Image (cartoon, rainbow, N blue to C red; front, side, top):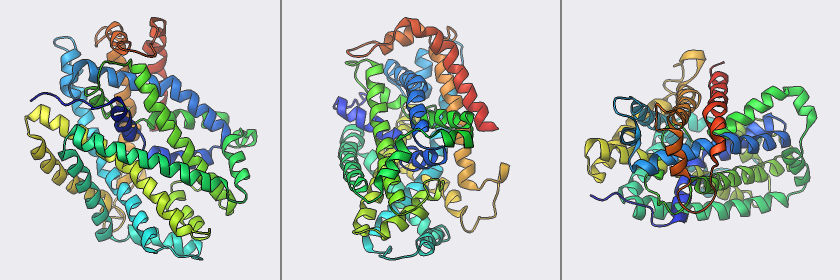
Length: 451
């Protein structure tokens, strides 16, 4: 059976950017900005996105496009005889499963809140305690949590069962277009709120007072981590889409398009959240609870809050679900190629596997709430730690070494693949940076994640 390809370049950009756009953009980015003083963090984030995120993204895409295969077979097609780089492909598959074991639950939270705002669970005049209690009640109900997770998993696999072009690409185009329209509408509304200027100032103007409080090293480290993790690199989530893409355009051009769209959504989410927070006297450094405990209280106290809350969590649902759908496609493609499964069969098997594997995260907030792992982490935090602090950065380091070392694929082959097509090109003078500096920066991130 001939391998599918994307129907259009726009489809590739939307699907790949949809994989990158997710919790890291619309949930983590705003509160990390809030914790690290706003404007300076944003500038550093953009710098590290170009210095680190863009090169590693091109490396994943290069392995995929050159091999036309999923991770294990892709490594095998490009590695030298007798080498073992392809073992990382199996680690990538484990990473995708592990990511979905908690990501489907969080995506279910977004869908749940969209539904709650739409049906009026959050009413005008609710107190901060009452809005926060809604999230507490959700976490305490294993049945409700499991139901929303189940809906997320089944819907994602149903779309993937239709194939790349008719399912993932077609739905991604509609969903990403709607996401971009929603984010523009929400941002414009947020900017018109009284007191929005103070939120913009906090968000975009560098604040040296914050740097003195937190320490410049902490702000730099946080920006480096956010720029790196926002693109979901290291577990071949992007590699698979490289294997479907055409050779009409250079990989730096395609990677720049993905980064631009990903960054646009991250920055716009800040334009939605910070003006709204300052308008209603809410501190923007509330941590992960900002989305589910703090922002609902903002919406219920603004005019038309039910509508704006519904639209916001529809946007959040699209952002998180785009990642779910993209990673599911990676898992399905892998199973079809490695085990010779027909797509529909791979979908059914993996739907059952993901539902069962996601239950520990669901139960970790209620019937297994006393379950703790290393460092006192609960189930979700443990799964997130394994993916974010180990599999993503270590996997990215392996992709980097594979694309630059003679013992791997080699820098010459990588550059040739990158520069095939029309558009931006990498110069060969970048070899020392890609071969020596970039791996050191990734090692810094790995070290930071373990300390």
